[in-house]
Image 1 (cartoon, rainbow, N blue to C red):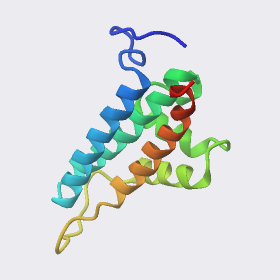
Image 2: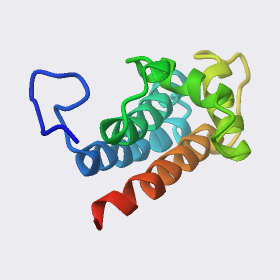
Image 3: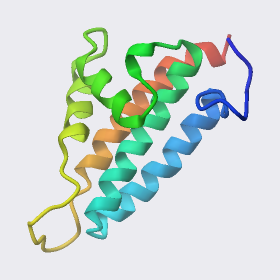
Image 4: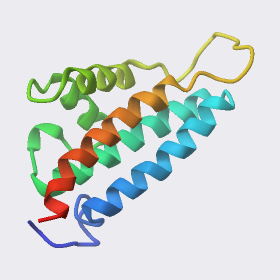
Length: 133
């Protein structure tokens, strides 16, 4: 496993730091979605999921996952080795429009933050065994 490298896109944070950053981004995404700031919430949910997957890639680089958070999400959606639930929510995040024409009454829909949370949790599970080793 490589060490941290502040000049490298993937190794600038440790796996635990990527997961922590993802969880912070997830909180902001959920808040934005709840406040009906759809574009900000969708982008944040995607970033949260992608940051979490960086933690996994840090430990096992896979070029099929690309560099961007959207690349990560697309690859997650197509990877047959990934649990179905994670693949489905990845594709939901990829397909989510940045704009919505629907006027919502009450709090905003936070289901995209829930989707990102599934990916963050899966990434944490994958990283956890190496953290205790």
